[in-house]
Amino acid sequence: MPYDVPSPPSPTRGASAGASSALIENVGSTPLLRLDGVTDDLPSTVTVCAKAEYLNPGGSVKDRPALRMIQDGLESGTFEPHQTLIDATSGNTGIAYAMIGAAMDLDVTLALPENASEERKKVLHSYGAELLLTDPMAGTDGAQERVKEIVEAHPGRYFYPDQYNNDANWQSHYDGTGAEIWNQTDGGITHFVTGLGTTGTFMGISRRLKDYDPSIQCVAMQPATAMHGMEGLKHMETALVPGIYAPDEVDVHRTCSTERAYAMTRRLAREEGLLVGPSAGANVATALDVARSLDAGVVVTILCDTGSRYLSDDFWNEG
Image (cartoon, rainbow, N blue to C red; front, side, top):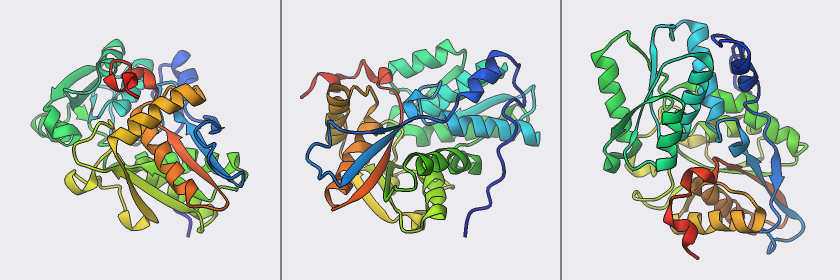
């Protein structure tokens, strides 16, 4: 049975008008790209496509849930004008919050691990967000704990959307990304593959695709080990599991190593002209694993964020 998902709030609610409205209206509707260079070993009956979410205004797939959570908060009154938005992030949702906050004249405070890429920190500073850097060894779990402590100590001062437990996260993908993928493949998609972080992308898209066609196989990928180099992805066995995650809705579980993710990220830049981050590399590497097991099909995955946020990382010089 299709999910009963509330309609998105008005896109201009709480916006300061003008440029802010124009920016918000350009979140979503990203292109679906057929991969040709990295798929040259596949039969002609198997196609791999990637949703170019890095072309969102904020440079990542997280623009969609960040906007939806802010809109829902303003629409419901749980986010009042005098409050500061605060949340934990590995970087991309934080950048989306900061971008939208700047456009809508909202104060934003973000907790993120200290080892987040320098590019991400600089982008957040550029948008005017306040940063709380947390223990790098604790990852985003540690950032979450820091935010919860602050919110409990200062009730009423903050709006805490809590992206890991907010249904608006996955609903943004149910309404938007999932429907777009179905339409862009003319209903021909047979397999969907993406990594798990907050899990909103997987949950929202897979639920929408299953509503269209229950036979579509939805594949969830996570890092092969707890210590990995793919920002935004969670090794579920050793991490705080998001409240919005429903593991029983996953058809197939797969893992990807950091080394494979880095190698594919380099290939995407050099063979496809797609400058994306390591989580996108992991998604494509896993999608190719799925594609190689098929005689025919259309496999779709997600290019999560722009590679410009990782240019100081050493992996570009390897291989």
